[in-house]
Image (cartoon, rainbow, N blue to C red; front, side):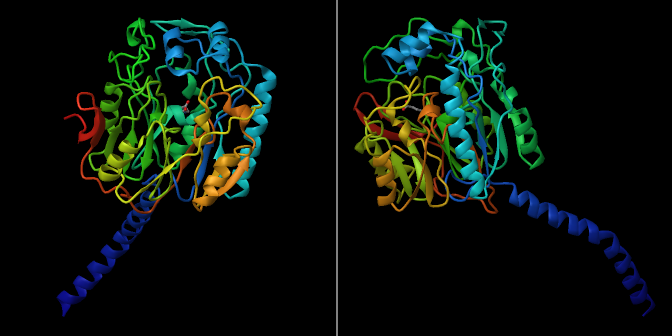
Length: 419
Ligand code: DAV
């Protein structure tokens, strides 16, 4: 009996001591659970980082980089003739007004937004590094390009291949600080030197069907926008701004339980995958009908996207635009921000609005043509944060895959990545 009394007193005492510890660790587990998984790029959104077009400058890059990725014609001539000069202030203020409308709409939907802090002078100083000197920075308009969100809670500052983007993340320092406070881990990828040796000096458009990158394998390089999150799987591509070493570096920081897949769209001028494929919801993949031809669609359905519908995007409207597309093809219309059953779409893009309706996605039309001339639409202009309580394995693929074009047979094949 005495023993029992002593035991009970001991337990009571212990319980008093242990209770706060048990309580705290439960609380911590549920918090960290809430903050762990970033979800796929569809479904409900909690917080959106939106870019700013203020102080945007014409890129001052090696000319072969600009030739590799920018549309040919008058706009390319303008870019090549104005390296490092500010863009037309009238155009930028029209773009800024469109962003304000977009932000107000997101807020009215209960979605938190945050923006980089920049003024008209932020990018106007020369960038002087050991290996290069250029006249100015570019902009902080496209957070999608620089901030790579990886599950479960990682934000990577990308080693971007454009010299004019090397100081861009400074504009996001407050945004990143607040993400850290919400439990995300921010990691800077190794800063690239971007010496002349990072670019193929005699690159030119051969007119060949095979993609030949303008960047070398001297150092890891990637833009975040070459990758899309599908829950616990990341799907990306090699491009004129993402090399093999960049992909290997991402693999090295991505926890083993998450998958990284590389696909090879039919595109000799690739820069960013988000006007080539875009999830419209779980099981619905919007694809560029030429960059993702039928044969590639079929192999994707057999390997990565089992039971997914491949929805070919409608051809973009060819009507007049309010501003020239300096950086992209008209397929920028595919570059949408998708939420829970809805998608932002440019208000003049009647074909895409009809297309979305036909596929049971609510279209939210907003004016965005001035902003689009800077190289992105609603997807590029944002980074979406979607807290999830549970891990989302939506693709159910057991290994990292590489879906590639076998040059000898001229057919698409699947193998393990890095095999
Ligand atoms: O179709 O010109 C746009 C990608 C934007 N991040 C294109 C690619």
